[in-house]
Image (cartoon, rainbow, N blue to C red):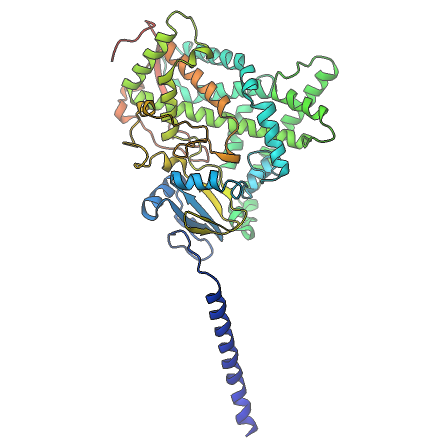
Length: 503
């Protein structure tokens, strides 16, 4: 009998515990409102949707948006990732709920490159970030400061024209030419003089920042980066960059002690002056100063070069647009030997061309990711705190409900609208918007407009080796900043007449 009852005890208690568990589960489920999650493709255990992502994430998300709609969810490992692909979704995230989405997710490589996120681009939203951004906006990138570097832009774009003239009849690699231009301008503006080796630093830096890092989504697999050499590659870039900047800052301080400094002539001097004048309240320690300089270079060189590449490529592919733009430029500068920034204000077709290029080819097609700081709701969908957010400027710029014939390169579409790229029109935000909008837009656009205007003022262009316009390769490269996959090259001849005949 004892044996009989003991044999009943285990299943009896198991049944009781199961009933209690089932009751509590049903009670908890019933007491909590069901969440409405964004539509999502099927995911695998552990890795989520990472196995589906292609080498061109902006195109991958574009194809998903056609199937799942303008707001969708994927999972990178256990990390939920919200992808916004409509103007309404972008407005909700970057304006209506800007504060909730004002922070950045932890990106290990980027944080290491900028000294533990002591910069503006990757620092989490905080009082520190607000102070650093204020320093950038007021002291480095204000309209007055941008104008003070006008002579640098004009001198370096003229130097580029001379290098092109010296190329003779050979095809010019304009991707390399634009890379040198943006590097030389940024070196003079940021550091005070040109450094040839800095172009290689930036290339290496953007390469490692744009490389997917398995440790960001699977911390328990971060050790793989030690085995495959990625950690060592990042360490070497950081070490070389740091040593370079330490020497630059030391040289500026030495010149100051010797009475040779020229206050305010470059960003290093401006920041050192700010550091001295605000010793007790300034967050600008040397590491923060170096982090800001890294932001200026990575944000200022690669994106400006990319915009120039794609714009010239589209003009080569659309000769009628190029002829019309040349006519505008040469008429405005008909009595001048050279173009200055004063002339740009009257070049309305040039501005339309730049806008159209930014619409089709935003330099960072998936804007730098944000992260939700609290649980929230976006366009009827529940979004949990910690969710990463990508805004697809690339897809929004191709939305047929916003843009007529969106795949066509048609600058004149901007004659019919006041839409601009400075963060107020969410159908067109290649530089972001809200608190995390790019503060260097004015500087980049001044340089790119001037460079393009001078090129089309001085030269006519032909595709090399009998390549036809319709055969011009327009495929994307790989990386966070998306260049043309094949560099832009063309044969140039000096313009014979200041005016261009009607095409």
